[in-house]
Image 1 (cartoon, rainbow, N blue to C red):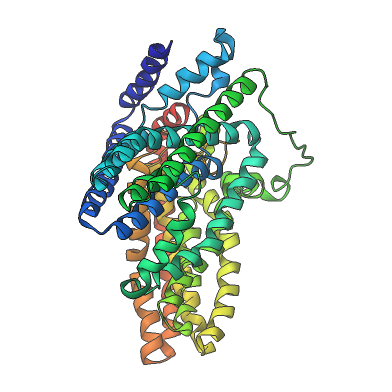
Image 2 (spheres, rainbow, N blue to C red):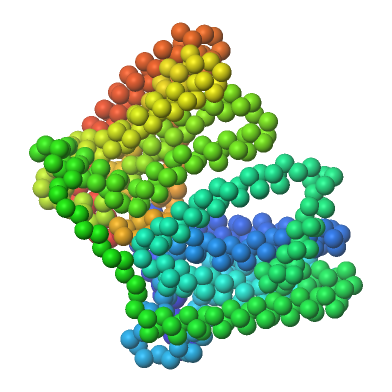
Length: 522
């Protein structure tokens, strides 16, 4: 039975190489990225072999604790699709005990497990210091088992308790807010004078985490190397007990999921035609009404809108701690929000999923499709940028920079929307399907998504470079340049938006069959 599960997992991994070229490249890059991280961390752990015991103990324990916590938090908060969900085997008559063992062993066949295995072997070299190496050797399989079982339990809890879209969305939003709240803590740690106080801070964190189930297995060899054999054995027992508890939790979850149907959220009922009552009958206006409906009802767009005001804060906090003047930071929010608003529709075709067939079958003109999709971000973005510029200009200390801030923001927004109109038709990549968690990452996504996103960001800055330059001249040489920046942002951005709609429409007309096939395949 275990061999069958392993063959199934290998077959699932092998099927990934039968997809498109971009997806194959993405898988290879993902594997290379994981191995690169493993090699970098392993090299650091091997290098700690030459460090003093207190330094090595603190570094290994803190890193190991964060690693184990990551295997718990990430599957729950960000939603990981489980290709080996126990409920998929409910009709095969497999006992829960055999299914528990088979799925746990099959989970060893994955890139994260390979990374953890390499790291666990590297920590053996770190503690090749007399008797401590014995606990390090014993701890290596315990580390792998802990991380794998943490991931399995967390993934199953997320799939079992957070099965409805509303609960998954709420958890994801909570995760973003949590990251936002703890970000200043990490930034303060970065601001510590590590040359003088760093070891004391790191040691304090390591002492606490070494007695937790997440860090005990990493700290046991360190205690043995320092001569505290009793403490090392006690921490090893804590680690083994934690693995046992995880195994019991995993068995209970599998047995429960096999006999418990997946929860489904109660569907909302809507009355009336909504935005279609005022949209008119033109192709572009109808598509705009449909896009506005998505923006109002679809959780995937809600998360994007939620992130837009958060990102400037996340960027401002580290710059503020680094000593950047507050008035300079006041110039940052409007361009950043404009960038993400313009970027928000760069993969809009993929967000439609199979609904794109309506556009293809009805013969919608590509330019009408492109125009309809830019209307929602324009309706949201322009008022947001105006209000943001009105707030940020006084914070800068000179209200006369309002035209420059607004001009830069509009230039980025309009040029970004024009570029997104082209990118979504020419380079769509797999996106979260309608109804799924907006934080779930499609398994087929890889290099194609990374390249498209990076290219969209960089190209938007390049297209808006003239407006940036005029905005800078307004700050340096006088406020007459501020009105020039506003005019450039509107005119140049408008031309780029119009060009993007026309060019993107032409691509949409030419590639409609390919876009339909893409939506069905992904």
